[in-house]
Image (cartoon, rainbow, N blue to C red):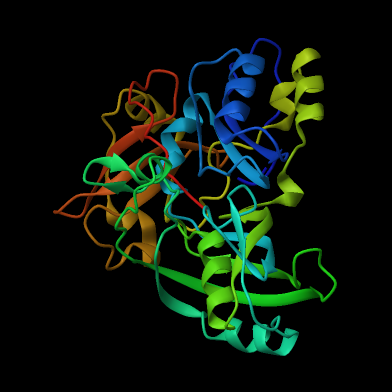
Length: 331
């Protein structure tokens, strides 16, 4: 079984693994986390980046020991299908804000396609006023709700791909563009809608958003909530889980012998970087390395020490005691 394979169900087994949910429009990401926490009967659960209530799509959830690998997914790139409405601005840069129509002719498809290309690559993006970014120790959205204008510094983001896939001149408020977006983690797609509207001499806001990929996880991996509820009711939730090591194939790996597993379980395993072969040459201090059992399942993460040794960092075996990392504001 590869690291992308489904984790086998076992009666009475702990719920450990990655559940990729297809979040519907409506609930918050935290609502979905709370639901799955209740269905799985576990307190240990994290997610790989929030989605606004009006957004849908890929939301990876990390259950049990899989919470120990969340940090390796938080910086992963994202992909979205975004609907941008032109002809009005929004206080929140999306459909949930107060809309203000703008004067002037509506933009053409050609103008939008040309302007879109200018955003490709690295881009200094100003976060939305209604965002979780902090200004003077306070959330920007808290200041904006009080009628203040938070001074938000631009942040560097990257757009790897931007494709105009559909255009409708007959939108109720103005022209509507459907855009496929591939971007770095932490990018605000609603800020792209705002900036794209300004770039074509009009205004724009995000009318709909669907996340199509979060790092290695795509809609093909994602489960709608109804099948998740049904699987939990039948005691088969584990059938929907990916292994904790899913999506980490890009990290170098050492395959352990059975005799080394006990040392790993106690966090006392160390090894030399020559165990990595050619892949281990020139690895920087602190580089994460997967430790795999004889069946290629992830059992721990090691780090490269200053002297070249591989030192156990996070252990996924039952006797491990390290804690889960946090999550981040996203999209």
